[in-house]
Length: 411
Image 1 (cartoon, rainbow, N blue to C red):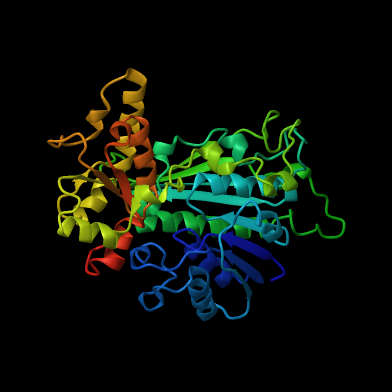
Image 2: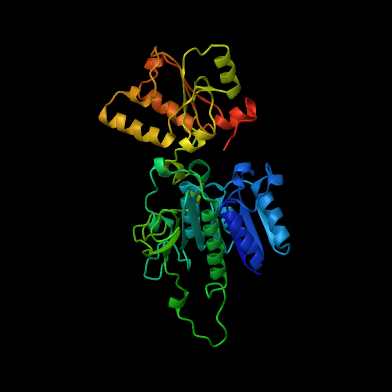
């Protein structure tokens, strides 16, 4: 009842974790998320509801939790965690749950937890698999490296996955029960930490061995596979090493500071090579969904190529007439190969127009990946020295639904 648990992310992991922590009677629960509820969230983010679509996820989740248990204090943070606000938000809490879905934020959360001495329960899930690990537990001061020092996220994952492998549940898909299993497990680990001797003093006269307080660093991997020979689902527990002497965040010579993080050092987006960040294209390299629809209807664009960079699963639900599918992940791999081997950049185009000056228009799910595709196409010379117009649709297929076709099945 005296415990304070912070849940960062009110999605597929945060929803089940929050429900079980509220049900268990945790006294104060904080929730951080700047996103709003969408219909496509509901199959896995089970604390939200159809009638709350459009509501901020933080408010939707707290509404649900109050119905489960009105007694805890619920603290909303209706914005995303950033390097500028992370320390201030995390500092008051006893245990932190990382329920986010991107590597840059995971490294940020872990770094701040090391510097503030907070135990961290981190989980991730995509498609049909998930993983869970308890980090910095018991909390150990930065720079102290011994057999009892628990690892941080960087100790276990020194390098982030390549950009082409960094896909969210919304992009790659997720089987709801898989992410639910991981969220439930996070709640269980948090409760275990709160009721352990780490946070409860020994009784009078009781001898406590420090070794009893140690949490064996273990990476729990859950997989659901109907084709598996050992059954549809499996759990594996991999023992992880302890704190690394050369760890950038917690090692002996670490220079990481809260002030440095706040001022942009390290740059988490750059470190993770995040492929979903806007690349600030010039206004002339972008076109709104409304303007594109008008130009294609009145023939102003003429013959042109419309590249849809969503994954094939999303493309199969619906597309703009005439669009050809070039999944973003495959595009990046092929672009790198062309640049490395010196092949013709025309190989990136699934069709060759009659004129090499025919415009290329790129669309993705929300207007982020498409910007990087435009830059890559120009970098490889497909704009023919400026003679060919290459541009992306602002806001992607979501904007197409909002501005042009309200019946479009945006997934």
